[in-house]
Length: 382
Image (cartoon, rainbow, N blue to C red):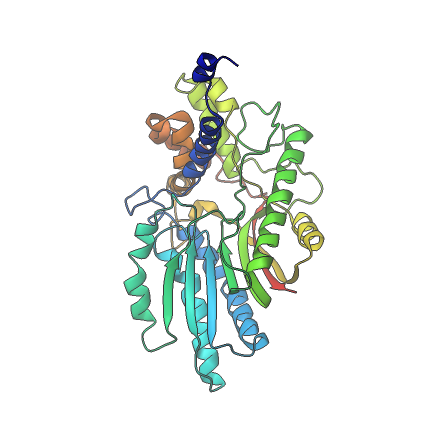
């Protein structure tokens, strides 16, 4: 080949680097809004705090079972997968450590040394998370020696050495997929599955979820010891028959409507909307059990379903007006999606978009037939 022609061709390494850069651009966008400002995840995550409280009994029960099944080891390694940032990062870990300390005291055993590994994607705001380490350590004074580490990386890859973990916890992270499913056709104007979506869209999302969750279980089975426990909490749905059905006030349906408003007003192009899809899946109980059974490394200890109520995510009480509920839900969705939305549509539309979102929430304030639920799943390594 003419060497002059070779000089004009991109090298294979350049092509590979560009592919990696494109993929990493998506990874960078799949994160919560950092910092501690008004539009940060840290300031808008009471929903997640409520979910942690809801799952507390399962967490405590599995922590006790893990300690007893492993005959009270002198060293424990705990992983928090999808830790995000803010005070919520340490809620579950604190509960695990407190449970271990109380149990050891009850049976007159010395508490183990504990390594706590905080995992999230590399672009997560770990700095805000680690600001709470001194407070966490202060609360753990005179108890089991505890050491906190960061473990950046996707939980759809290996994160820890073989047979090194004793307990894994993850809350409201596993409903996010490793990528947007391929071949999402004829779903214009929607960012996720809706009643009007073709069946092929559901099948593409289900297939991506099955592949991702199977991979997650296989990777964790290599990292966790036999009789180690996992407690996983994520968004699911309560529908068993119609895989396309989502209620009219489903959070991604309202996001689609809000983006369509911006298309109508000329602020967003239709082609931009039609090429944006959420990397998310809300499995029902049958889909969850099927993946766990087929992968085969874990047995189900508990599988609970709880009410999912997004509109009250930032309120301690339910006596709020429709506008406040709308703004709260808009803020909750914003801190989860803003990096992705800004990367695709640009930052200029964000404030207007979530004003529209809050309005749509108030329009659906009387919606009662909701399909979204919170799964609380505990697994034991065989």
